[in-house]
Length: 609
Ligand code: M6R
Image (tube, rainbow, N blue to C red; front, top):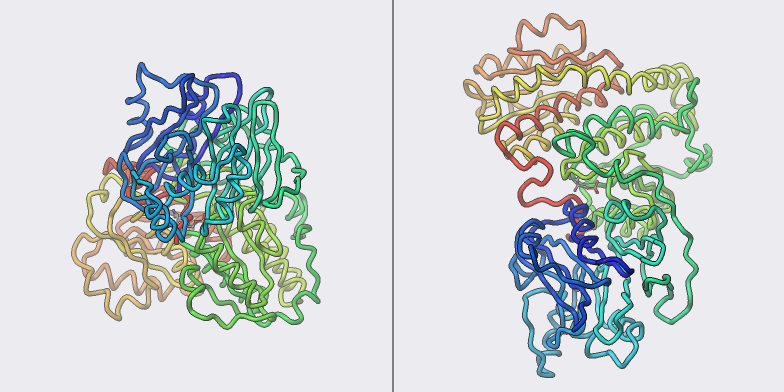
């Protein structure tokens, strides 16, 4: 997965390219490069490392020209190195390409091109695209690109540039995101909106198979057969500031603090402002829509998968439909028993995770109805699913997902209430109680965020540990999974989550003096059992931090420390209980000097299998 940008206009291209790439570093940051159309030809500058390494390289010798393309890479084919960095060119250097995705038949094509005498300069799959582009070019970029697309297989967003046509970029996509920003006398290309938002809010969101010719005068879109396509302008309704850190030290912290707003935005229009009715106008479901549905599958990856586990609980308990939750990369290959009597819900913040997209396609192929829960309007998953419910968390830049998770929980809860009411499995009174509770969540989160000093101290004290354990029962267990993932992902502390009752079946052997164990005890129906498990670890001299409900004084007798959350009710507790876990992970990572927003080996949007 990678970030790509393009510029054609009257201003210097390089500053925009570098700035746009900095907004896309969340998509990959192991190497970076730009190509600018200079007076005497196309100049390519690239190097391994973060964007700053490229900036450093260009100091005092910035390419001069008003058209160019750029790329920030996360390696898939060919290790991170100067030679594998993008842009890639043919042998002459006159045909230049940036690419996000994987060309699956590149080896076969490379062999054919080598047999024709062509020489390759990198180990990437992308380089063959530049060679093919050159090979097919007969004075018409668009026609050459079409021939390339007929030849390659795989997933891609691509931008093409050619010395013979100085004022034109061509871009196209399949299964990877691409947008075009529409300016005055200038136009922009990018993998994602943050790269262009400082320049324009008017965009075209490209669909698979579309080929756009982008010049300073305008943008023309066609399909591979040359049929013109009229695109609708998509007006971005969030501003440049929203994509910036807004005064916080890290995007992750900013995004944690944005949760009250994200929750409010996601509720808006679905939960009556002064009432208790929950409705999804975008779905327009009726009771009949569920008469034939015998099972729901929830499929997702990482944090979104953890939201799915909570979603299973909600749907089974409130809407009384059996639910299976699957890791997307497993679902696709395990021959799941999916048919037309199933509804498959995929959850994805980015809407671009390739495992989730592939699982969605598989569910569709097997005849299932599909629903996407995603944060990115116009994303591949949003477009592929039969129906979409958006989380309105706003752009999530930090690799570690926070506000996307809480808005996913919210959507799953509201969906369960909506379906429960449609099916008559949920009483009006219980639905109203949940809705009233939901109204309070933003304020409760806000108040919790005002009091984080205690969490900072815990993180400082225990940030040097090697291992940590997270325990909980029922919904607390689902939240424990997310707490452990957050800690591992950004602080590199080894962390495991266990159903509290399961610990004694093996893992208790790992509990020794001083090991931090975070015990979630917010679920009152299993509270006593959870406290027994807490005592089991305390008896092995673990250091226990309990996450408990306000007013629970008795737990302080057993735990070393207690972090209290408001009493919101069983189903709502996960929305609040995850907040201290996110903050613990954040401050532990800070204590350890980790690169919080860009943890090692990870990227925000995982568009490779
Ligand atoms: O964009 P998605 O929600 O599909 O991403 C899924 C996972 O890659 C993502 O949640 C990942 O686990 C996060 N980095 C966790 O913080």
